[in-house]
Image (cartoon, rainbow, N blue to C red; front, side, top):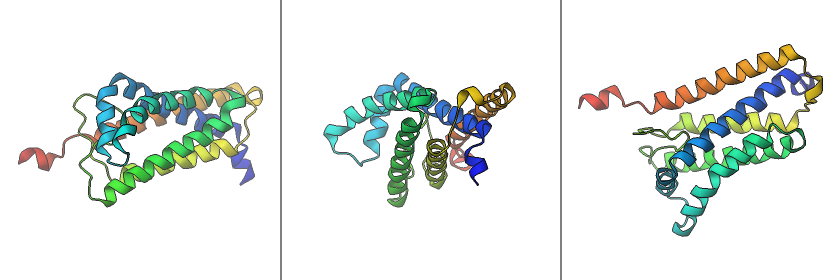
Length: 182
C-alpha cells in the first residue's frame, strides 16, 4: 500500500484534480455571489448573521486551497483544509437529504438556471473528494523527481476527471424528463 501513497504520478493526478475542482467551484461561486449566498441560506444550517460572511469567504478559501495545493510547502496543509471543506459539505448535504430537503441546489458549480437537486450522489461525491484530499495530505511528492511523462499523464488525467466531475454536476442539474412532461 505504501507504493500507492508514494506513487508520484498518482499524487500529481490527485493534487491537480482536487485543485481543479476547488478552482472551478470557487470561481463559479464568485461569478454568482448573490445567488450563492441564497444557496448557503437555503441549506438552513447557519444562523442568519453567518450566511453572508460564509458565502463571501467560502469561494476564496476554495481558491486559496486550489493554489496552495500547487505549492509544495503548503500542499499538505491545503489538502487537510480541502478535506475539512469536503467533509463539512458532505455533512451539510446529508443533513438536508435526511430532512427530505432534496429540492435545494447543492451550490457546487454555479450556472444560470441551476436546477440541481441534492441527493446521496452529492454526499458520496463530497466524501470521495475528502478521501482524495486525505490521500494528498498523506502522500509525499517531490516535484523535481516526477518524470515528464508522469506529469503529462497526470495533467491529462486530472483535466479529464475534472471535466467528468463538472459534466456529472450538470447532468444531475438537468430537468427530470418525467417532471417536464407534467
